[in-house]
Length: 276
Picture 1 (tube, rainbow, N blue to C red):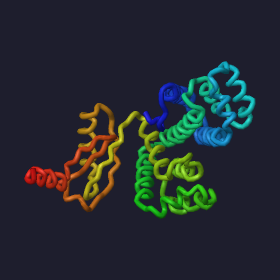
Picture 2: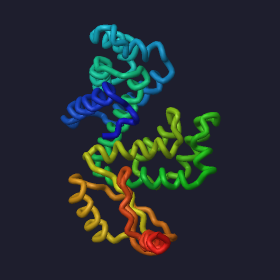
Picture 3: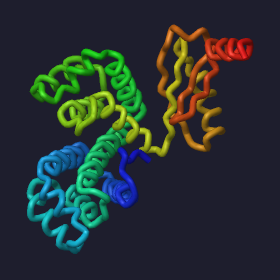
Picture 4: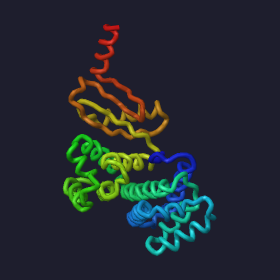
C-alpha cells in the first residue's frame, strides 16, 4: 500500500481511512471528481495553516472536539461525503501534523483513481502516469520547469496542459495538473510516480517496470505478467519502456528487486567470470 513515507500510527490510520473512503463511494452515487477536488483543497489548506494542522492532530484533544473544530472551520467548504470522511480522519491518530495533510492528498488521488475505474479507464491512467513521469524525468529542462515552485503556478499548469492536450484521460489530466500546482516538496515526476502507485494500489497490484529493446506483444505481456504473478503471489501490472542499448532480452524491476535477462547482463557476467 502506498503511504508516501508515513510511519507507525499514521500508516495504520491511512489504511483505515482508505477503507472508509471505499465504503463511502461503494453505493455509486458519490461525485468522485468533486470529492477529489475537496480533498486536494483541504490538503492545500492544511499545508498553509500549521496551527490548524496541529489542532486537528493534537492527541490531548478529545476526538469529538477535533471533529467539531474541523466542521466549524471546514464544513461549509466541502460536500457531505468529504465532511464524513474528514470527520473520520481527524479522529484518527497521526504521528506528525503534516502527515494528516499527506493522508488527505493520497485519499484525493484515490478518489480520482476510483473515478477512472468506474469509467473503465484505470489501466489507461496507470500507463499514462508512468509514461509522463518517465518522460519528464528524462528531460532535465522540462523537469526543472515543471518543478520550479518559484515560477507562477499558472505558467507551469499551462505548460503541462499544452503538452498533454487531448492525449490523456480526464483523470490523468486532473492528477497531472495537481502535481504541477501542489507538488508538496517533491519534484513533478516524483509526484506523478506517487500518484501512479496509488492507481496500482487500487486493485492491490504490484507494478513492474520492464525494459526491453522492442515493444512487447500482447501475448508476451500476458506470459510475463502471469510468470511474475506466480513468483510474487499478486497480480502484476507491467509498465514497459524501451532501451535500444540493451542487446536483446529484457530487464524487470519490481520494487528493490531486479530480474535481468538481457544479453548485456549475461555478457557482463561472463566477463566477470573470466576476469575472476
